[in-house]
Image 1 (tube, rainbow, N blue to C red):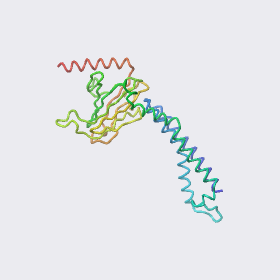
Image 2 (tube, protein in one colour):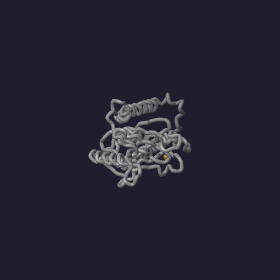
Image 3 (cartoon, rainbow, N blue to C red):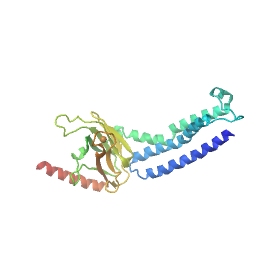
Image 4 (cartoon, rainbow, N blue to C red):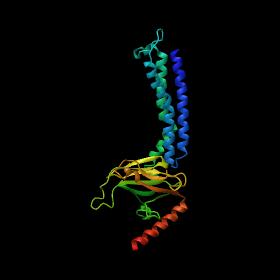
Length: 270
Ligand SMILES: [Cu+2]
């Protein structure tokens, strides 16, 4: 009888947890505006949906085994007695093997493979390259294919502008080009655009890549999640180490590039 109560409680708790999780997920999916963030979201969501009932079953079983027994209650099985309970042992073995296979073979695994495949040179040779330099406490963006160094907006603040639906190869470095004698002198930062749903650590002495494609136009002005934010505590200026981001159409991006080139040429000729 106790096992029947346990089964009902477990099923009810699992249904409630799955409902709550899916409710939270629906809200967070609507905030993501990058191809890679959406793929990673689906993979994480699938794994959590499969694991929630398993987690509740195991943790519930531990609590159930600790409850005091009344006289005449069925004694819980000792692990050594499992051979005498072939049905339970078989179901447990088949269920866990099936769950593990599912996590390996489900299509979301191949979705994650798409993210990793972006790192192959053959798949990223046409990407827009953006050099990102992290220094205490500023993000500097350069566009080597357009000969642009440290792009800024009308207010003179560092600004990142990305064309929508074009793959971008962010080349991430931690360095300080304004340091008086050692431009390599800096600390670990983390490149994070909350609306993209992914992030990458930026390590002094290393160049790391992050490959992303934005799925819709957006701007920091209307959505504060569309910003570069340092996600690694890097000193007293860390909370303010952010930069506005704009995701624009291809036409707007070309116009912005031309404006930046004109502005940088006039600044160099002064
Ligand atoms: Cu930081």
